Image (tube, rainbow, N blue to C red; front, side, top):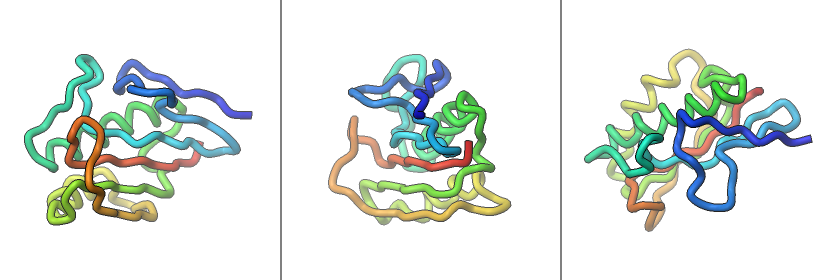
Length: 125
């Protein structure tokens, strides 16, 4: 069985996908960019501000699913510019302290809404 996860505390999907899906004891959170949940507009002038907004959106989705950032086991970070890795990593480290999840980070040529960063996660339910 799979269950759709939705919260008004994170941006609504901008396409035919769910904010997250719960299945088999895991929560699969769709890639999030730095959209304000209230306005749907991209926020943050730099990758640090955008990373913070992205992780706050992910936190809200995980909480709506009954999970949390502490239960994240895998992340994938997509950066528009790999030169932003250090700045992204600084903010990312504030959210994942105790046992950081496994992670892949890749540079991509373009992200939705011209965002600087997108992050997707898998967490324990």
